[in-house]
Length: 232
Image (cartoon, rainbow, N blue to C red; front, top):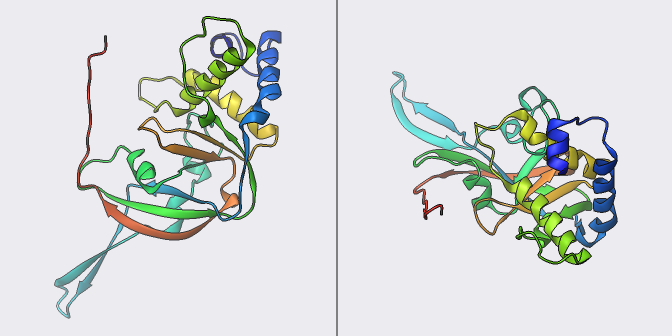
């Protein structure tokens, strides 16, 4: 209902039902509020690298060294802030993962591609909304408040973790963008949500200056594995 209303009827001035929904989230998010301590490591990756050539006196290449991309490539830039699941165009957020493997896999890289992966560390304690405490579930058959609450938060977790596809319109991002902005305005510094690629977790920081880059390395993709099943 919330998604339909903000996609179809209006997104900047909320209706009574939308405000009731947001207030209900506010009343139940303390169970999902965690402290992310100073020094927590997270990971961010880009399909990019630098090739450094050594040449002899005649200009012939003698060797090549593969190096990580420059530091700024691992930080989001305002001029390249495209629309995302948690941010409208022009608004910076810092998408990261809780493991190197997940950070690289989220790029959907091809075999032989070279990826620069950076290790970042939080510079202070952060207040984080952990959506992974709730898993997507079927609509509850009974009307207990607890089951309805778990269903709603599980659905939010699922909505945040859905991969972006080219067929989506910007209107389809509006519900999660509104929720992310609502969480940010109410004191959360970041959101943890499930990765669509398995049991791992992603984290989105509302500011990149919460983090410092401490190391980086280049990885090459050796294999990509997919599994399929009937869709019915």
